[in-house]
Length: 327
Image 1 (cartoon, rainbow, N blue to C red):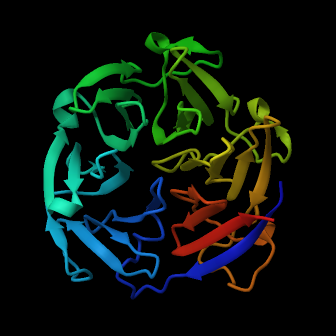
Image 2: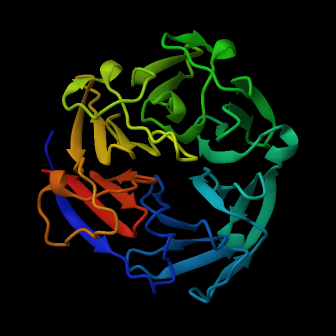
């Protein structure tokens, strides 16, 4: 599977979405484009013309005629519910809020801190009546019902790992940076300090290893996913790969942050390939919008990737956003 560069955006530092739109943008199932400004504590929805349909949160930048104020701090993820409302995880307050933009209303969905979460990461609706959420440092994944009540918890709140498939009750993780829903209805966990991707197989009730050996290492190209290794920076607070996304066919994309490349696990073959980025990273150097070779991209700190309609959106913390598409 070949990829080409569709767009490279160099976002200037004076834009109101600096350190936000580039780093935390998500597409809903219908293509709605959402934005989270992690450090300024607000979120919003953009139209296809890049106009703000609405904004919400603790900060009103005056970008939209409709702003819905509420006390979110460090918004982390947005998921759509069938009734048109949104769930938003608030890492800074350790809560999940339910936002109803059409009604200009917000309510608390789950006080995850009181439930026992150490630090909320993503919240993901699975399409079957459950919301899955993870703790980052707390090393656990929770299943909640649509009233915000816990159904089950995977993990014990302390680091652990199993290379083999294990029942839900036995599963252990080590700092989870991302959680995404696959087109098969299963959940995929970026078990970052275990340097691997794990699959929560909802129907079987097991957690299995999809990619990664459990040990850090170089980004080898065209290897079996089970033999792949991912980069490490032991001096960083957030070690291991940062970002995970899946497309409509079930291909998995991993932001191999410290190897500075994007890796793809192809569903059909089970092999892992490098599709973008170069190992010899150049900190502070922006990507040339005229670049045509994905393997020459400078990606010092890949974060929060997203897929939609055949495209892969690759943000870098330096405020570059690269959009890749299949040839």
